[in-house]
Length: 246
Length: 246
DNA sequence: TCGCTAGAGGGAACTGAGTTCCATGGTGCG
DNA sequence: CGCACCATGGAACTCAGTTCCCTCTAGCGA
Image (tube, rainbow over all chains, first blue to last red; front, side, top):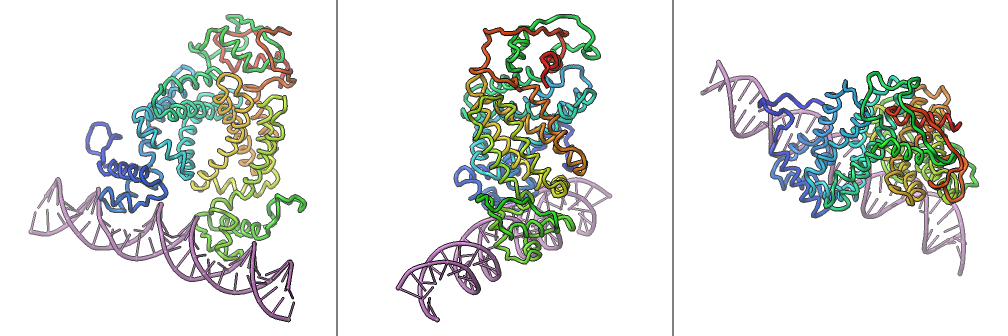
């Protein structure tokens, strides 16, 4: 948590730029790619980077961390994004979907790096496990935001956690399909589509009425025709198309 | 440590019963509880259990594994449960909800053990991370089953992963609320309620028509009255109550 | 009874991640 | 010039996990 108040530049404090850190990441990935993650020791990395072993652990708390060098910053960005709109009046589900897109953007900024890392984590169990804990922190950030917005209703916490899990699952589904294509396709399209499914399932309307909707007020009438035994999701699809929602 | 792991009939060939394994689990938890997980070394455990250090790793591939001694079996049970009904004709969402209940049952079989483990994992980051990878394996088992049942429709894989994530999130929500109550309340009730929410959101009808529903057949008509700008989940609630579904 | 084998358990020794402690060397400041 | 302050370097340590090899015992055939 404590990043240390060693920043002197009045510019962006979070974008502190230690060249040593980047050198370590570069050296680590070079070795990981040419001989594998588990076959590479910390000593190998620091030797190639030309720095002391102690310095590695000064910048990365563990060997796994060097594989995900920018997630800490991205998580902070996500929290900031959610905080700055915590009192907004729009759909919280849409909000967390947009927050998830921040992660996608980070991946899309460095396609080749992201694809290399994807292949690495796919092969190494230890990295898969570490990635899970990273993803979990994003999910918790989303769930906490949603809890604050949904706590009023019944099952607020439950709904917050389920929606957060669904958003993360959908985002990762789109992200992985893009990573599998070696970063060739359109990352945004895949994730937008996946998040659209979640938003259609859980989301609130685009235009948000003050005070939220009340069951006893009927400004409009929607008629849905359906088989009584149709799956609920199919009914929801019909409603969506009737309402003209995405 | 009267709180030994589950009893199984010796007739079950798969569940052969190594007494040494149980002794290691008992010794480990005794030390974990009295001095903490990280303050306990493997040597401490094997010394207390009166066995050789090498034997620990014969039964548990890592120190974390001794904290979750029965998940491997439970995961196998879940896969078997899903496999044996892979060709069933009922709602796949209901099916994975029932599969998730297998995990709850395992926790409920040893309440004190489960609560102790919950407190332990809550405190130790390494155990939290390990638990994530365990949970992930359940989620993948559910998602693969769903993929096989939903792959026909559009976005089959996406829907499978989102539903699996939602089921896991809901299950864990109910499970945790029970664990926080020191295993005093009704575990089944909390999880049933949480899974009910998921089933209401994603589930298909109870009675399954041969060949599945077709959009062009209208055996029945349902009229839903709602604000046009009501949240979709609220509309779904109305539909459910109209249809008399749980 | 002997000898052989196989498999469970025991244990020394090794690798490597992560930590602790301290030395060093440069930089700003009085 | 000397002092304080850091960032870095590096030795030495702990402990998880692995490798290699040993012992002991059960079983079995001759």
